[in-house]
View 1 (cartoon, rainbow, N blue to C red):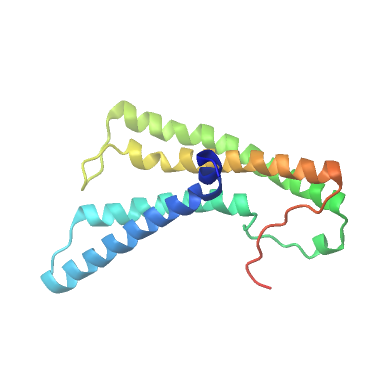
View 2: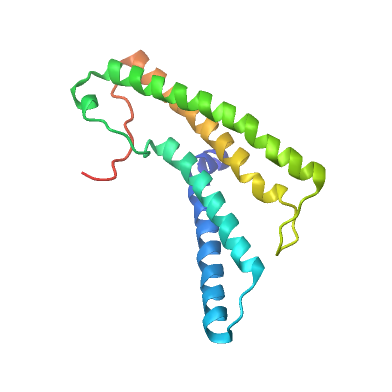
Length: 170
């Protein structure tokens, strides 16, 4: 399996794992420091906060990839494959437009932060690194939506069942 195919298949999983582990370890250390030593740090809280933000946006892209986002699909059970594909394409198209607009506006806050050189309170690191969570998340979403369009158009073209994603509850 090629490296690019491996990255395409598992990129969000690995990024989610990294940010989740970072969040849990930092939070555990901070709880122990607070309870045992009656001392906590500002940097620990910031790492947890920004890890959570990255976790949320990368997780949103992973949900788009797997079609695991919340939806009401009772009607979808009664539709044929072509109609389902068209409805999924329409939904992805709406999400694509919103993601493009959000990507554009998310760069505004990054630009302002870079222009004025704002830094975090505890870590004293440029806020640009943390504000980039939104453009990264929306860029990943746009990439996954393009892949979804391709997959759905192929289903529509060949009349095969459309990918409906993983179900949370059965």
